[in-house]
Image 1 (tube, one colour):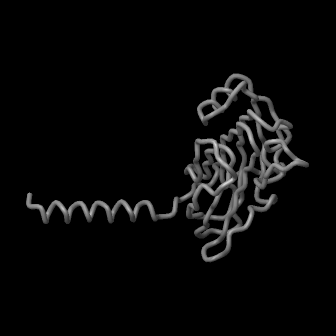
Image 2 (cartoon, rainbow, N blue to C red):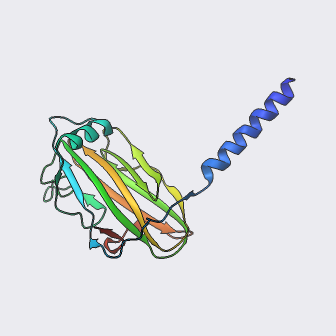
Image 3 (spheres, rainbow, N blue to C red):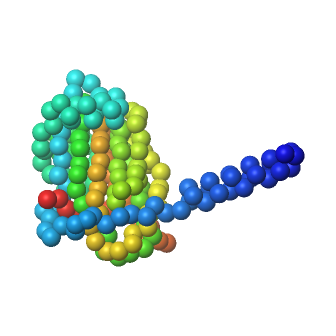
Length: 191
């Protein structure tokens, strides 16, 4: 194979890989669709001696998760007056598992952005939409485009951990061409 063919083939592979990455993730409706949901996001907590990774959070939750006060939405930023990580009642060494629904009222392309301090992994409709597994400030993880095939409820699962020094978990969305804004509380529900 000549050098020109190798370079051309490499360019084609890179172009195709870029096209796949740029395609919106096609979400899958929850099946069955829930007939009724309670407002907010159901959450289970564990409080390990230390937590430094998603794996640590997963293990801690597997060894002794306890239901917590449901989250109102995904717009949590700790402060001096509200220092707890989410609704845990604890500032540090928190692991949380969230299994709920998120409702999209119209089909289309949406942009999702998540902020976290520290680590989080979130999937919606069968696709990972956010993942970071390190100690960090409340920074954006990176916008992801999703394709919503129909209005309705979509499964949302999240694994979150907070070690120390402030916490946040925020999710924003925008319809195609719109500006990002916090996902409203009314878009979340749990059984």
